[in-house]
Image (cartoon, rainbow, N blue to C red):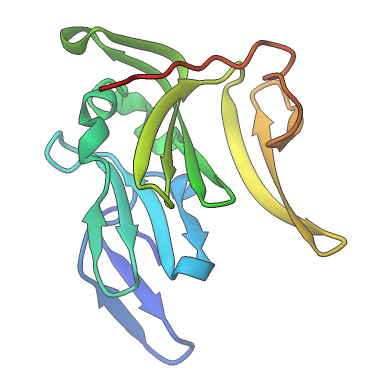
Length: 173
């Protein structure tokens, strides 16, 4: 059970508090049952705002490597962050990201974590994502996202982003 400032697990008979912080956006909570993890977003003050992971015992912040992007998320968007799972990738729509001190400006920003490589990647999408859900169809689990125009899209699917080019870039060391 996720609250703003606390987490609890329930095993049908008792409620146990989990060490850590809760979520400001229920739509950011995504379970990775095969890994025994749940990833979610918490937005409050600068020291606590970020993405967290819980294993039902404790939670820890995962997003330190992309803190400059997190700092660019408007606090008005903290309640509206929507996340979903694509295989072992956690994707979160965070709205516009603007951090002028770090020269970061992304419209309709996406932050994603690849759980296999433990690498965060920023990106953008052509839509304002309002919700996401998993739907099992013929024993196949599909992810759908809904946008602010009341359209629903299967993701990942195709080679465009709602008809637009899929932007990408690569950074080398």
